[in-house]
Length: 164
Ligand SMILES: CC(C)(COP(=O)(O)OP(=O)(O)OC[C@H]1O[C@@H](n2cnc3c(N)ncnc32)[C@H](O)[C@@H]1OP(=O)(O)O)[C@@H](O)C(=O)NCCC(=O)NCCS
Image (cartoon, rainbow, N blue to C red; front, side, top):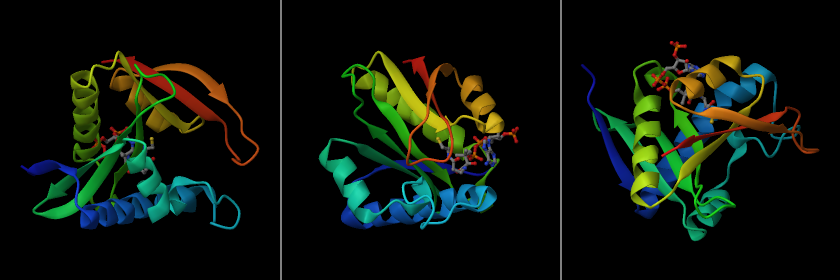
C-alpha cells in the first residue's frame, strides 16, 4: 500500500515545491478546457510565486503530501472573508499520483486543521460544470451554496462549504 506522508510546508524551498505542484496539477485542467495564460491568466494553472507569498502573508498555511519522499500533492488552508470560515484552496495532486487517495487525505488534513483553529466551517470554490469534482466534494461533506460569474473567468464558480 502507498504510504502518504503529510507535512506542513514552511521552508522557502517547500513553497517552491508547492508552486510546482499547483502549476503542474492545474495544467491538466487548463489543457482540457483549452485555457492558456494569455486567455485565462487568473486560472490556478498560472499561479505565481508572488501569489503564494501573498497568501502566506495573509496567514495561509500550506500542506504537502509526499509519496516515497517525492512531492505528490499539496493544498492551502487560507483565511476567508468570514473569520469562522477559512477556505480550502489550490488542491493539487500530480497526474501520476491521482486516484490513490492523496486528494482525499489532503482535504481531511485541512478539515482537521480548520477545526483545531476554531473554525465553524470550511469553504471551497470549484468550476461549476466540473460535475466529477463536485460529486467528489459532496462525497466529502461539502454542500453547494451559491454560484457566481466573474468578468475575468470564462466559467461559473460554485461555492461549497461543510461544517468542521
Ligand atoms: C481533484 C484532485 C485533487 C483529486 O486528487 P486525487 O488524489 O486523485 O483524489 P483521490 O484519489 O482522493 O480521489 C479520486 C477522485 O477524485 C475525483 N476527481 C475529481 N476531479 C478529478 C480529476 N480531474 N481527475 C481525477 N480524479 C478527479 C474523482 O471523483 C476520483 O474518484 P473517481 O475516479 O472514483 O470518480 C486531482 O484530480 C487534481 O489535482 N485535479 C486537478 C486540480 C483540481 O481540479 N483541483 C481541485 C480544485 S478545487
